[in-house]
Length: 283
Ligand code: ATR
Image (cartoon, rainbow, N blue to C red; front, side):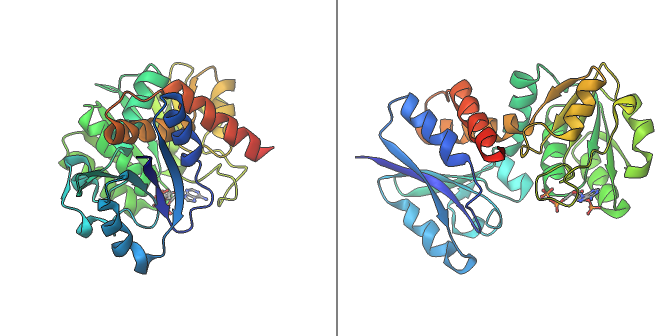
């Protein structure tokens, strides 16, 4: 029986998950189709109940439904419970479990894509929104040494630093204005803001310039549209190592894929498909 998979969100037209998930299914010869489903908030419950059908392996969940799906699931794993959000639902014989692969995807992209192990390292995090929260929790799990959280709005940075401390990692909060000093001693810099994103609040922006970035650090921009952001350009000019956001996107999808299929995800195939798709969209 052909298997069904897909992603729900609202709106959802921009998602490139179908491209790289379908590439993975095809590569492994799995008889399945990964679709895009635009589901309005008032239709989420009925949609999730429908996932118990035998031909559904599972789905990804994106904005704005990551929290809304939780009450309709039979169980959520620890990552999803800690994050308070689900990005992956698995259907096993009518039983629905919720997972969150963002943290694992972020760590795998750092390790496999960036050759970077965060244990004991000093990390500068730009931003304090939902994406930054996921990154902080993942870095706490990976036993990072020290987190500095820089945000435009002080209160959100303070709250996130407190959450980091509750999760066992030393953390401090600073204003974005003070970021240059914190960058000097960073081993890893992660941009979790929407600065540099196409059609975002500051498309042409970069929160750091080349002269502020140490040549010894890794700069990871979670923005993947465009593939090459201005921050990554500045980091390259500084001689630093760079990691694009497409890596985290693909690795979180690869972790979902492995839960649905029980098979190792063909990550390189997925990365190539995702990169080609983004390149074709931006040209
Ligand atoms: P997400 O879920 O993608 O993290 P979010 O929760 O809205 O989205 O967070 C967006 C982040 O980008 C926040 O850290 C935000 O800063 P504030 O908390 O001060 O709003 C940051 N951000 C957005 N636009 C920005 C800009 N023009 N300059 C600096 N930071 C910006």
